[in-house]
Every structure is written in structure tokens, then in C-alpha cells.
Image (cartoon, rainbow over all chains, first blue to last red; front, side, top):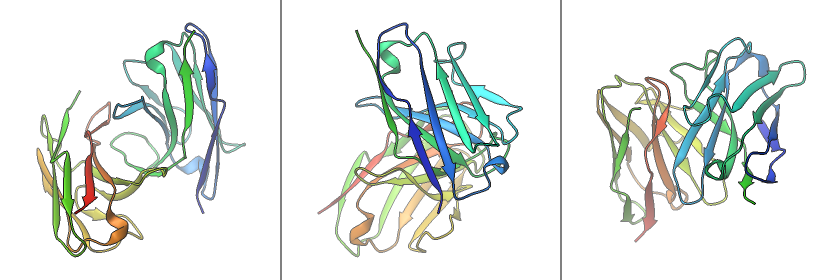
Length: 122
Length: 107
């Protein structure tokens, strides 16, 4: 059974940093791209970032480019999202998502974690 | 970014009904489209990808069609467990974008 367990969320002040982790199990982690998707309160689903199966390719939404960094440790089956210079508009539930394919381009999302709340507020 | 517009925003239907949800892309995306189901308190579930390919384990009463800019999700005979929110997502170009969702409610 595929499981994706996010951790590291919480309350942070504007300008602060947070690192989300996602522990994956139940599939061959290093064979699939992984994605972060978020949903702000009362808003729709927003794609944040993707990393290819090898970690060699990464892509970001314009809204987080230069502030967020996605990475993965294939030896630990773990996905990360380092979030710096956080803003109030980054407040959202963040979902760790498994991609259907390995490259992350032209891809779909076949398993989602339960999500973790990040609140940016003073 | 490609905008995805779903209609209707909500629909009421009864068990056994046939229901169709529409998704329109702001530009052509070939068949690079997925549909997801989301129930309260649960993570989204992939139903269909590549516009019409049923994800493994998804009941055959779900089907998808369309290409270019116009797509449909059809549930042939609604079951009680199908009442949920449905989202479309384009995978043609970065960033992947989602529709705003269609809430399927019990009549």
C-alpha cells in the first residue's frame, strides 16, 4: 500500500523558513517523480513543485521560484520542500504527491498524502 | 498558465442517475487531462488520466472523453460513494493547473 506521510508543518512568522518532509513507502520511490501541491484556505489546488525520479530535474511555480527548494533522498525514500522567505499567501495545506511517471513533465498524480498545514502569520 | 474551467460548479443528483461534468481548457491540451475525486477529509484520488484512461481499481461506471479544449467526466450510474468533489487537471504544460472543482451532491 502506498503511503505518503508529511511532516514539518506549523506556524511560522513572515520571512521565516520551514522544511517539509514526506516519508514514502509502498512503492519503488526512486522510480517516480514527486510533487508538492498546496491548497490555501478557500482556494483551489495549486501545483508548487516537482522533482524527477533521479532528482536531476526540478520545476517550480512562479509564485515560489527562488524561495522554495524541492529535493529528495532516494536512499531514505523521503521528499523535502525547503520553504524560505515565507509570506502570508503561502499559508496552505501542503500535499506530498506521487507522480504516475518518472520525469515529472506531462504527468499525473496517482497518490496523495493527507496534507500538512503551514500557517504564515505574525 | 492554462486556465481550467469546470461546469457546473455543483450538481445535485440521485443514486442511479447519469452525471456529466465538463472541463474546458483555455488553450488546446491534446489529451493531457486527468480527473480526480475528493471526499471530505480524504486525499484526492486519481480516476482518469490521458483524458480517457481509467486508473487501476476505478469502477467502470466512470469514464472520460474529449481532446483539445473540451473534456467530460461521466458517471454512468451514481452510487452513494460517488458523492464528492471532482477536479480536472491539465498536464500539457507547466505549471500543471486544476479546475476549480465540481461538487456532486445528493438530491
